[in-house]
Image (cartoon, rainbow, N blue to C red; front, side, top):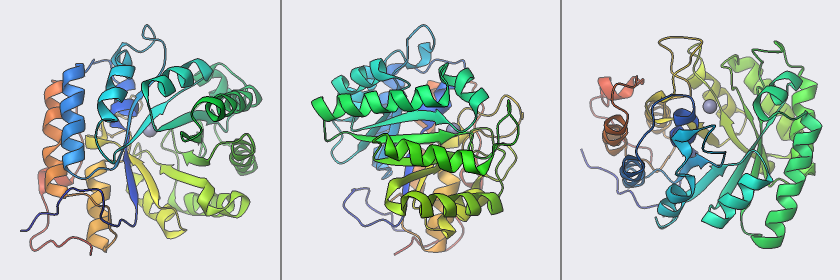
Length: 316
Ligand code: ZN
């Protein structure tokens, strides 16, 4: 079979954003050596992955896995055409991420009051104030940097339980009003179902416009991750956060991956005729440097063990 080239200049229909290096690594205890992260970035780029959330700028004592944040950003931005994202919980993190040269900041806000306090030790309103401060800072020093303020636990919260849909849409609107370029919704706790995903994304699109919505960030805790991504796609969403090999797992659901598996979602889209720009065989091969850097860590995903279907052709 003829492989696709991995250049970034081909047109794509959906943007798959790899978040394993941040979301995956922060939820496991193992520390991946910086050199392994570099090899993993190389392999992802080689496979045609155009956007990587490479790290989070948080105090190193809280997350030793991400203590090399600035170094990793500097390595990644040297890759021509790659969009490099850093998660920042506050202005201090944003300043460090911008200084390192990150292209895009993602700021986690929460639809649930309880989760907001637990995750960032701020109320939802205080977090929106932080978004405003970060926007103001970046407008002054690095106006080209893009800001995504995502809404966590948009589909349910392990602390609060049901999260009212009005609260979620309100947060999406407030994130945009605070100056974020885009917002997004995350099923942080893996509680979403496809009908709910369609309903909420449809409402969010009506509220702020499709161009103001970034990625759908779905988890596979209960096996509905891929179905939820498809539901979001069906109502117009074209950005998806996924994690190679479902890195990170889910502490509450042994055997279940955390984030949606990058390889599996890319395969679904390509098989459907939706272009991702990703070479699936190279993507499967990109698991190896990740596995080498995290010996003994659980890996997930159905495509890698099963392989591509006989006669598989990429979307054109
Ligand atoms: Zn996640």
